[in-house]
Image 1 (cartoon, helix red, strand yellow):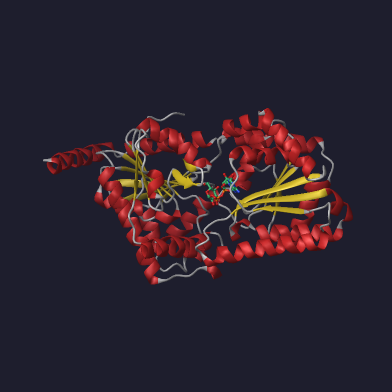
Image 2: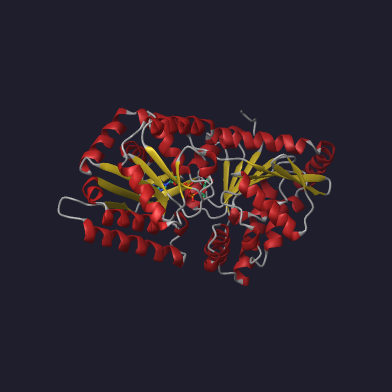
Length: 483
Ligand code: ADQ
C-alpha cells in the first residue's frame, strides 16, 4: 500500500543521520530505512530531539532535518533519566530499576514541549505529524493543543506497561493523556493494546472497543489505539542473503569458527535483551554436554548502547566478565566457545553472520518486537536454520512457528539452546522456517510505515468537517503571521 504521505513531519529522538569516523552516514536500523523514502517523497521535515546537529546539517536532502538545541543537563535528565531510567525499565518489567525524579520528569515535559513547539512551527496547515516512541509520548497532546488542524500519529515501539507497573509512575495520567493527543496510536501486538485498555480502566478514561482496537472519544474527535506490527526491509535482507560475496564471507566465518554448529545472538547491549542470562544458559549447556563443548560456538554481537546510563555501563562489564569466565572454563588454544563483538556491524557483515548461523538465539527478557528475529529469517535464502525466540518478545506473537522459550526459566533456556544447537534437522524444522519466511515477508517495514500513514489519514477523515475548518484557520493564521 502506498501513501502520498503529503507534508509529512516526523518527530523522533533519533536522527536519520549520524557522524562516524568514516563521515556522515545514515543511522542504522529498519525504522530509519523505512521512513527515509517516505520523507524523500513528501519533502517534509524530520525533527530529531536527541540528534547530532552536524550530521543533520545537510542541504543535499529533499527534506529538512531540524534538531533541538537543548541544554546538556536537560537533555541528560530527559534521555538518561526519565526516558531510560524510568519509562524503559517500567515498560520492560524492571520496576525495581526505575528511578522517578521530579527534575527528570520536568526535563521530560520540557523536551516534549520543545519538540511539539518545533513541530507546530514546521507543520503546514492540515499537515500530518508522526511522533515516535516512549521518549516523546507527551508530544501528541501538546502539539494538538497548539495545532488542532493537524493529523497526528504516534507509535510506541516498546511493550505498553501492565497497569500494575504503570501505577507506580507518578505521571502515569499525563503520559496516557499525552499519547491520546494522537488520532492513531500504534502498538506492535494485541497484548499491548489490552494493557493500554487496562490503563484506561485504571485511570477512569471512557472508551469503546472496536474489534481488537480501542476508540477513545476526545471532544470533536477520537483517538484510536490499534495493532501495527513492525517488520524489516525484507527485500534488502533477502538480497544480501543471495549475494555471492556475503555467502563466501559466511563460509569463511563458519570455517574460522572451527566448522561446528554456530549459534548467533545480535543485540543492543541492554539488560532487557537477556544477554547475561543467555550466556549463563550456554555455560550450563557446556557444563553438562561434552559434545557441545567440542562442537558448538556462540557468537554474541552486541552494539554498546546508552552508556551514559549507569545500569548500561555495569551491564557491559557483566557481559565481558561472563564471556571471560566461560572462556576460562571451557576455552583452549584452538577452541573459543563464545565470541563477543562489542561494536556496530554494517548490514553486509550482519548478513554474513545470519547466513553462517545454524540458529539465531533471540532470547530477550522482554522486547517490544525484536527485529533481529525477522532479519535472520529474511536473510536466509532457503528455509533452513532455527529461530529460538522468547515468549516475552512481541515477535513471538507474530512468529508462532519459532522455537519458543521462557527466558526466565534457567533450565528450560539451557535445554532449548541445546535442542536448537544439536538436534538433527527434521522436515518439521524446514516447514517451520518456511512458514516463518512467509510471515516475515508479509511484515515488511515499508508496508508497516505506508500502511500506518494511510490508516492515519483514513481515521482523521472521520472528523472531516471539523478538520477543514481548523485547517482554514491555521492557514489564515500563517498568512497573518507572514504579513
Ligand atoms: P531495539 O531495542 O533497538 O528497538 P531491535 O528490534 O532488536 O531492538 O532492533 C535492533 C536493531 O539493531 C536491529 O535492526 C539489529 O540488526 C541492529 N543491531 C543490533 N546490534 C547491532 C550491531 N552490533 N551492529 C549493527 N546493528 C545492530 C526498539 C524496541 C524493539 C522493536 C524496535 C522496532 O526495543 O522491541 O522491535 O524498536 O520497533
